[in-house]
Length: 348
Image 1 (tube, rainbow, N blue to C red):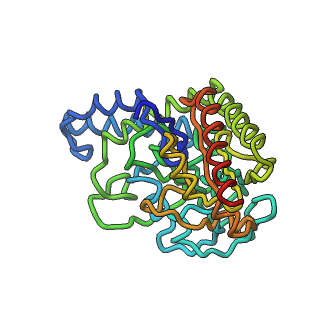
Image 2 (tube, one colour):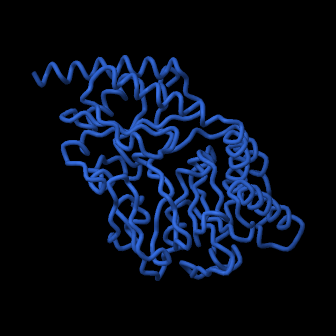
Image 3 (tube, one colour):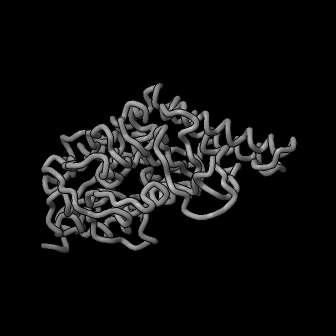
């Protein structure tokens, strides 16, 4: 796998060394965080340290952080027994728990009528398009924007926010629901009343420790301009692909986007085919969201943006990260160009 280049950071980010180190350190922690003896208190301190780390990185109060098994559970917890509206842009974990009734403007913005009963994502995982958030929104998915762009829960005006550890270099299987002070959530199941009675179940202290450490490092990277360098790589990529063919359609180009995300379509060149071709060549890219159990599905996101099926089914997503290099981008452009010319030769 050493000869491969990883261009699918929106699906999951590589585990940061800081997160790995923090996880290993607490693996032998004996106590249950709910126990009051010394061992339990030691385990509890791991959880509370991570809670502080994440709240600092996200601009939220530590008491507002509820640890979950990931953003999917966070969405379910936030939306439990609530009738909330959303647009087709949302991640499936939100879309499956809301009424898909909100329209999307030509510039990719969700048209919010009733913020207090609406869920609006911060950034789209497929296109990278950013939303202008309204004050008082019931739920916001911050999974993709957290630590890629300056983000603070307190000034977002949102009542609830979702986070996922593995999108910022933490471990898979841990996330958080952030709930504005004074807002309530209803526990999904009866249990031991952990997380101040809002999410029962013994806390995953290993995963939580990794999440906290990843948040600290990811926020430091953001402040030091790491993602500005990624933006330059993304722009270099798009310029290179555009130089090969004027047929390439760059979804969201010219709009406010995440700095790392390129969604491009060549009509007729099926996205799933392009993904498999580039995979064989040693490049990990995507045809959309990574939450379809290995099945490539037609994108409701691109449809909601007004793109015809012949464009949406041919879209691929290249999402970059701080570990990627200009050399990798150059080689990717060359290989993509080779496959594009094969596609055109067959179509002739």
